[in-house]
Amino acid sequence: MKKIITALVLLLCLSGCTEQIMDLIDPPAETPEVTEEPVQEPVEEKESASINPDEVTEYDRRAVTSLINRDLKNKYGKGMYYTVYADDVNFTKKNGKITATGNYTYYDNGNLTLPFEYIFIDQNTEYELVSADIGKEFAAQETSAPTVDDLSGRAPNRTYDFNASSSITVSASHSGNGTLLIKVVDPSGKTVKEVFNQSGDFDSTVTVDLEPGSYQLWVVCNDGYWSIRYSSV
Image (cartoon, rainbow, N blue to C red; front, side, top):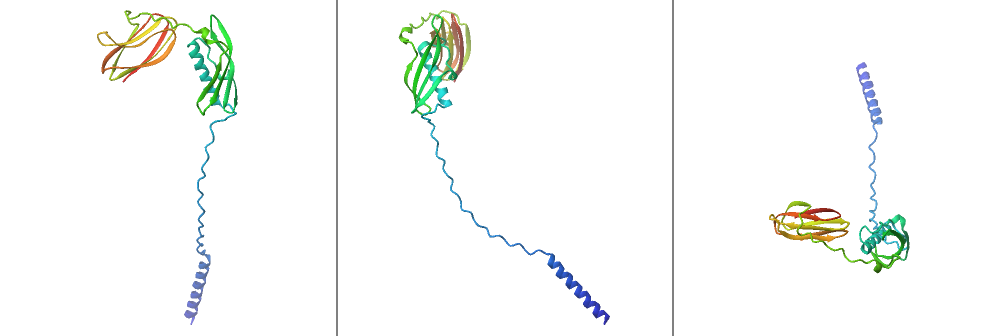
C-alpha cells in the first residue's frame, strides 16, 4: 500500500513539474502580416535652365573676358597690350545681353590706357559679339607685316632628329624682331618641308605631311626669342 501511495505522489510531482515547465515556454510568436508598400515611381527632375538672362554668372565673366583679350590680341598683336582680367571688368546683363566695360593698356611709344565697351549676346556657353568699342580707331594703328629675312643659307641654331610615318606637328612661338625659320630636312640636308618662316611676334601650330622615314627639324633664328614643341606620327 505504501508503494502505491509513493508511486501516486511521484506521478503527481512529475505531472506538476511538467505543467510548470510548459508554463515557462513562450508560445510561438505570431507571424506579422506583411503589407507591401506601394512602389513610388521616380520623379524626373526638370533640367534647370543654364542661361540666366539677367544674372552675370562666373562662367559669363571668364568667357567674356577671354573673348575681349582675344579681340585685343587680334587688333594689336601679342605682347602689345596688357592682359585684361575679369576682376577689373564691370559686367551687366539684361535679357541675355552682356555689357562689359573697363580699361585696357597697350604699348604705343609708351603705355596708353583707353576705355572699352563690349556687348555680347549669351547663347548658352556661346557668345555672339554685338559691338566692340575700344576707344580708338584701329585703322590708324595698322602697320605693315614685318619683313621676313632670307635665312635659307644660314646654319641651324638647333637640330632635332625624329622619325615620322605620316606627319609632324610643330608649335612655335617667337617674340621680338627678326625671323624664325623652321624646316624639315632629309638625311642629306635637303629641305623637305618648310614649317615656319615668320617674323615678329607669333604663337601658332602647324602640321605637315611627310613620307615615312627619318628626318631632322632645323631651327634658324636671327633675332628675338623663340621656343618650339613638336610631335611626329
